[in-house]
Length: 276
Length: 357
Ligand SMILES: Nc1ncnc2c1ncn2[C@@H]1O[C@H](COP(=O)(O)OP(=O)(O)OP(=O)(O)O)[C@@H](O)[C@H]1O
Ligand SMILES: [Mg+2]
Image 1: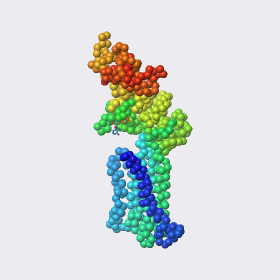
Image 2: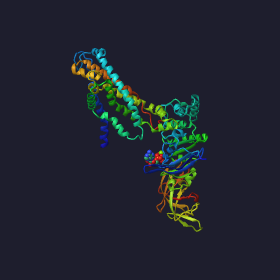
Image 3: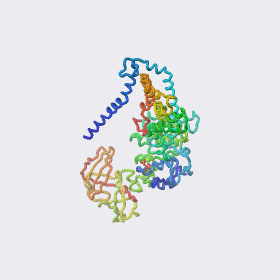
Image 4: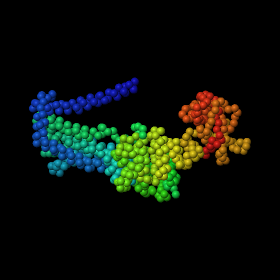
């Protein structure tokens, strides 16, 4: 009986998960994207008619373009900072036998666990106390702090997955530690590193709270611009921009996941898959 | 002078003494297999020699000189790992050439030596493949080639065949043996498999609980195990706890469940009791009860027969409650023996080996 129940439960899991995903993730997106094609001047679903006006408008509007440019630069810079700080941190933390590695890892993970609004409020108060307006690199650094944990996590996981015998084999062949890192270990985690980078980039690019609170309307990023236009005048431009944003995020995600999906990870056990 | 020498080597992890005062020496061009149960310290010993484990005591000498302070990447000791540890992102050719590149050899020389090595292990056709595109046996060969291309004088193998099926192991084992004799490197080969240990070795080192308990030629350890546990580690064994008694002719006798055993061994040192090793393949079995009681013979009932192809393993119960294993060679004209049949088991006195412990 239990066995039957179990198999029943198992076979039910996937459809349930898929349904939930579709309902809660895909449905709002469908509504959003569909709305972007409406001919009305207000958001309407289902859309009335079909037009590309809103996309055209958004793509030619200098304020939208400036916002996109801001987002791109800020996200890229913060990911750069996250990479410069996060990669060495991950390399050190993934080493077996590093003292206090687990508490340090926890420390790096704190930004994931603290609600970002609290973190941002703290930053704002700090800047207020100093009586300076937040410079752009302030936003960059704040975003870097928020995205570094994801980068460190993916890279650490990849490094820990590596067979420790790889390093030992290279050592026994006479290679120096530096050489082993550059020629053996890093090439084998490059893919994970890049998917960590793209994840960090998407997070930084889509982040609303940090640029909204720290910069206000002065350096509007795309999410900030969307937010304010929803607050002031709702027209289908917002839907068009959001659709583009979703498209870009999805593209980055697919690009970074493609290699991992297609190719199974290199086997570690070396079990034969056929005769010799 | 010995090529490799361990002197009182020990390793402690916390309170566990994982290697306990191990001393041994391996001659130039010799292949020593290390056999022992799981957890007996084989890998720890090998990793100490390679430099991955820092011993807690003792010394490791290569050609009479301590290597304890030599960095791993300068010990010049080749290693073949159990899971091969091939570099997944490099081709077979790049894997094999890695050590030569590290040594900054000229490019054409690297190419030549790699090609020659790949030919030797029959992998020339696979030079441009990645390790993931090879079968287990092929990966194994790449790992061997990668270590040997540097011509190390000492090569360590940690259960390199344990992921492979029995047929492949056997052929790789023979190839390795050939290669080792031809290139004359000194090798230490850890294995779980007692047949592999004996088939490959010039000498077998038997480990138990972190100690080296016996080291000798395969026939020595098999025929003259120093301990009953070693006898069992090396193959099926009848271990009979006997009482000693004085015989009429003055020669000592052994008694087991009322049966008399004669041995060619010297019983002088044995006290009241002795442990006797009788290998199953030395026990002959014929149908029917014995005609008359005689030494080195007993009557019993066949309690089971296991068919193994070339041989059959018979379990014989004798009336006193003892059991005896007999390995019967299968032949085309074998008498049919079924469980429950009365049988007579007998063996030559040379097969009765007295073990110290
Ligand atoms: N890094 C370590 N820390 C603590 N204990 C260890 C460590 N490495 C090995 N040991 C212990 O040392 C003992 C011997 O281990 P070792 O790996 O040498 O055994 P082995 O003979 O190679 O066994 P197997 O046949 O299973 O490979 C084991 O009890 C193991 O738990
Ligand atoms: Mg081991």
